Length: 294
Length: 289
Image 1 (spheres, chains in turn blue, brown):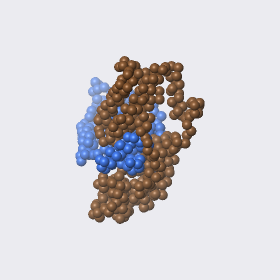
Image 2: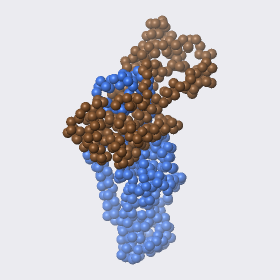
Image 3: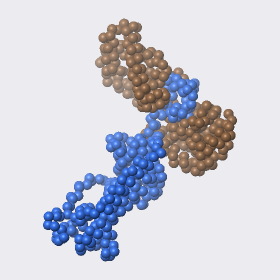
Image 4: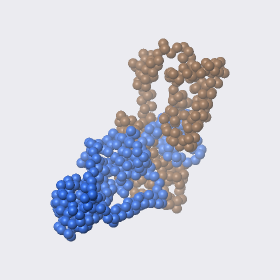
């Protein structure tokens, strides 16, 4: 038998070489042929070039997403529907409004034993050279409750147009009933703001300036990172990963495993660190051509 | 080998060849060429075959798809083969031939297009390395100063031990074990030899080795362990029966060689079976029309 031609070698590696006799011919030839052994070794070295295969989905694959999504929606609905004590409704993430309220004298409607609104100290943030898009999403979440009280006063009085106006309206607190109504509306506004922020993040974590991510990853994005104005990396399920360097087009980046990816932190178009759903960290310094586990 | 028209049409639809505006007749011809090469038509990578037909016919949509989906594979493979960039030149050459449409006619859908591209690249890379080695001058007796990097490494490792440190006993042990191992490897069944070559010499993973051998990776692991035991037993038998060494002397020999294997290299032993003249890359690909 002659040395293997490219297609026979490829079919052997793909497991699609037909015929037991042909397979045995190939194996016995390669066992004694230095060149073909070297070809086998070279094929092995190029294994990183192969994109991770898409995992086969069961007919009810959508249940894996539908169940947690339904549970989350139910939790939000219950949270919105169930009335909460007024002092709990103060937005903990709006430091401006909190400071304003603390400056006010205690409300007469509240019993003396009621503790003042608890201000949770802001956790010290990890200093990062490039804030990830998860940080931006969290910031959007945090900003939503602060803006919500403004919407709460619709109908009762003119909606404030700025944050400072919202703070001043909020600190007036005319009556307990109005305050309760306002807080409930505020919670609704906060919830819808958070949901909107998350929906926008899931649709395109890089922001509106980038074109929509490819259909391959749409709806499965778990994280993104935009280290500069033109570069953005997004990751998702089953090792799916894309990168844009011009805000218009997306290039698929090959990840060596078909594992769900839960986070990405990019430094530039070539350097990024990815966290898998099972907690492992991989890094690339060549735009995703090779990955090293850390 | 004419293909039944109904079968050709069924495969044409399955391949979604109309996406690339491939005429049914052209696709049927590609199927016939695959059948002539012994391909099982039901196992063909039909969509890739249709894409190759579309690219070969110059369909723009097919080309855009190929560039988007396959070209990165080719360049990543080149990077993996040689981060220094020389394989990238080969990849560029292959891409050029693909663009001229001449290379596509050698793809018959027996493998995926991505694996075929890797194989074409691997073939050219290996042949270029081998051609380079044939042109290199043999090292003269002056030692590492005149040697290439690989030979220099070997001289360096030998020098690290030093002939003064490696006494006659160690030298004799190495010679005896080398001779016995060479014979034992050559007497292995070809399947065992291939498994050793894939795993130890070519550094494939157990899963890849198992796939090529048609066995589960756990079976490959067990077979490799068994082959190692076989080799060890065969070497001991030869040292005992042919050279009259006692069990203690044999153990002493193994200990000496494991400390300093010298030029004892399983990769070289596995390649020593090679007696076939490799064909030129281009002729290998184009030889079977």
